[in-house]
Image (cartoon, rainbow, N blue to C red; front, top):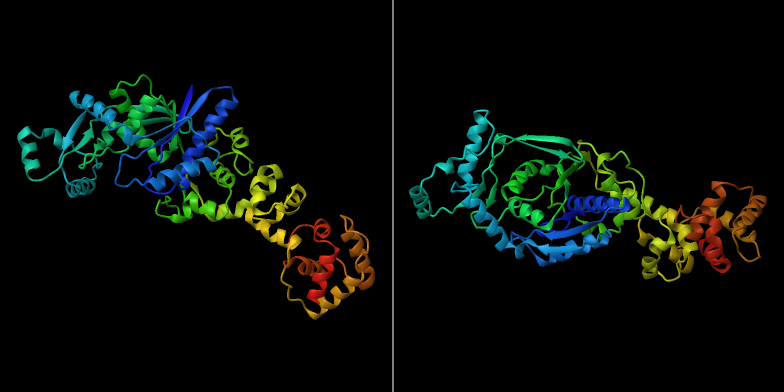
Length: 452
């Protein structure tokens, strides 16, 4: 049984970095199921920091995850498991694997600066291990609040990463991680390990900024007596156009904003999965199709630079490969008159699904008469005289164009450009041969007269 998880912290809206983790775990699970393996997906809400947790963010997480077609088999909140974390903490405390500290943030920063100045790795010096009980009482009497660190064992931690291959960390180069803050709340590493162990997570797939966490967490798994340690995969990070890590404070990277701007979920998924992959570039219509090409081995270690405008530039590419059945439920909400013929005609000329409203108006509504030159007006007057009298069909535009050429000598852009402007209001769009029968003879005549 394969089991993966997505564990967001509800301290803000889901952004592209968060959702990439969810997408990678979901695609990995789907790809394994396509191979005949069974598996489950866990949604874990990492809300140990209750001061930063908001219900609106929790609701947004679930809404955004579902928008991508990701469904979970199990879900729980870390805030419901404090008793379990305390139990594990007491176990490690009794075994001497955690220890109490009292330094202030300012004192720790001063130590770090001195170490850097001496060209020594800025690793915590474990001075707290030398504190006597009298020292601790004195410090607490001064008003200092204790925090706790997990004591790392010396030696190397070696693991095989499903993306990066063999990874090796010499633990003397890492600081003992803080697991409990001064206010008594748990930090990420410790409860995450306990939950992964208790939930039976088999694969932890996340960004490579967690590599160091993995080395420390492996020792926590061992200290807690885990029956097995999950396999890890650390995909390359994505950076913005300037080469910096995306920040949660950048509102434009939130999935909510992209969705409100009309960007398709599968556009986001295709782009995020394609970054840094040997198989990137193709637009897949759904997660199942994307999963069939997904493999962690497709990725290397190099960071990928990424411009948010890419979502807007590529969204039209996805719409062009979507069939009517893929979007019909949403099209009904826009206008119930849109059918498969209409969709196939216009999908190559829209960048967002909402853009189809313009073409609904072109066919069924009214448009503003464009500004035309006197020569174009004269031409349209001749074109009106050449309009076929028979019912419009897919051959009408060709017949009409031949008649116009015979009457005026115009052809190519000189012929089609003013007609397109007059009938649609813009210089580009679906083939006039497909539009003409839908607009109809009466409205074509009306728009030409209005323009001239």
